[in-house]
Length: 470
Image 1: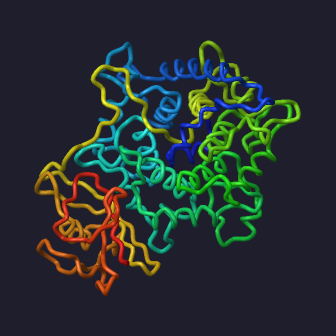
Image 2: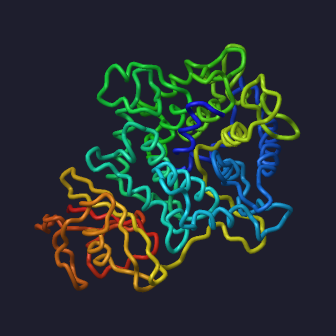
């Protein structure tokens, strides 16, 4: 597919709604029944299994098929259960985890969307994205693209999709227990940027329009509208929110009466419908509700199912095509299965296979990264990836902060910490001291904030948030 959206996908839940919206309760007007959807899912999963290479891989050069993992998870198939010829030693999860752990992944010149793609698909595969290996922490690597001069953006703000997929990855790739991994201050900063880039017609494109009235008045596209509304809902924004409602109305206004397709800038196609439906799914909006049933009694799900080959299971990209497309099939199955842009991994059926795999401790002498945010309580939020080499299986908060003063990306996340040694209470960070009830507190992987001490134990993959306040 040589079209603009290809670049977005290369240079590229969540809460329970994302991936759990099963389309089981349908209005009387809906034309795709639960039984038809179930058959579509079964056949779609069978087709996606044919995309696996003989070595067990889905990811490769160019546009790889690893996005299938989110579709599998949404459809109830564990990625670890997908193995060529039943050879469990080559199951898709293990092969993908091994790829992510190599020093050469993703490339010599990575961009933020590489790590966001990795985090979303690792999560769906049952790989903790912060604990892929002793050296690979995808959450920390996303943090490294924080734009200090434009807080809330990840990667160059001109390519706004990097921020959309940061919100999807950081909000969607939750902890193994299902909790929010990142602090609310960071989530709020991303949400503010997504809102600021909404066009006047209610949708979004992959380009930045914030602060540019002429650009905000240009037409939105279907695909990024689906992704951006999913980003908001993955960040906790409710479906009743004004911006989400405007996005829903934008999509509703693009429905083709006779088919249930959305009119896309790329022409009517299955992938654009898939992205739009995934956005609706993420926000808990039924794509077969009255709002999305045309006067010809067609819904977006009807359009997707009409473009599926059965029983083979693949989906066409365009209605005029004569063969299935791998990417259209991935986008369509994820949407039909009720998924957003990632989903929690199902419990495997392979004997002995755990739902999650994760690095359990640091490896002494192996360089790694940790995700760190510092909130001074006065509106200044700093976010960075801290590089360091542990000397044991755990480290301490004090050692992480010391490393951050010299080895953080972006720099300036931590300029000073008091005291600079020992294990006692942290009394000042970046020149801001404890004062009365206002003190420095720490949270790890979304835990409750508590008094910050240098001696606090920090483990592999921990997402660390420092906050000054009462």
